[in-house]
Length: 353
View 1: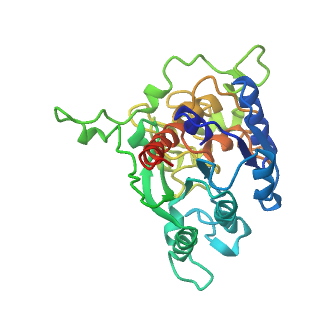
View 2: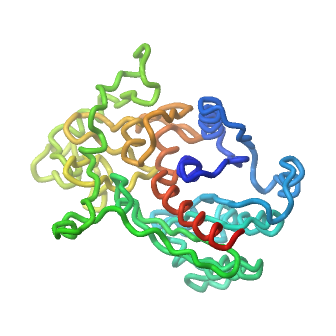
View 3: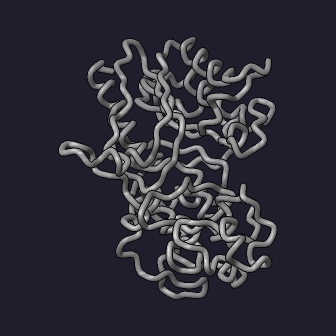
């Protein structure tokens, strides 16, 4: 999110992050870009927002933008959806705890679509979102929310997420209009350009090196185990292994079922990628290997100058903290953050805030 917000003209004062590998990534970006951003490696529940006001010599109400993407696991439709019964779900309301003290001019929150149906303590569907919006209103904000698709903003990925924007009255904020459209909607004379495809996003990338390569892009590394190379062999571009159970050997398909549509999924060059997620690593359209973290970043809209830190995990490996693929999958596509931040700027300028 901070990449896009910065591209929209904001100066990032501080980032609060719990994962150590993500903190390494953020510090590397700060050093590379010669920024003064502080990276706080801490549990956000242990950070007093009053401490931030003091450290950065800020008065309540002076901060332009408070933005964040709280952990989504408690609301994800592929998880247990325990919402507020999961302590990670409660982290969503750290945004309002900080807003209560910092009193920012605007707030930007990103979350998975599962938030829309997440149950509150009483079991009411959608209750978590209503509670969040009510808390923002009690703080004298006017919140607006919308489900946005990354592909509509030039990202080579179909990725739907809920974005909540809250500003002070009067709230003239409008969500940014799409810059791209589905191919079937982009045929008229004045139509938007079609969605960006995987093939377009991966253009002009060199071959990745293996994990023992020297002088390489540390994010463009192929760590695919031999077993996964064998299992993806014969899977057509744009398809997945479970769909090939009638034409590939039974031992190759293994125990996969028709529901396993994202496992051993080979991307298609002709369309945007499926949503990048933490549970699986997608495969290259025509090569028998995983997409590299650099290729993931291309599909997410990162600039090539950005470098991730931390390990690159193969499917069989286990890394408690976030590896490079999962850092990308957990993040907000920078073009979306930029488009939203630019819209927020228009509101702040028009309101002389």
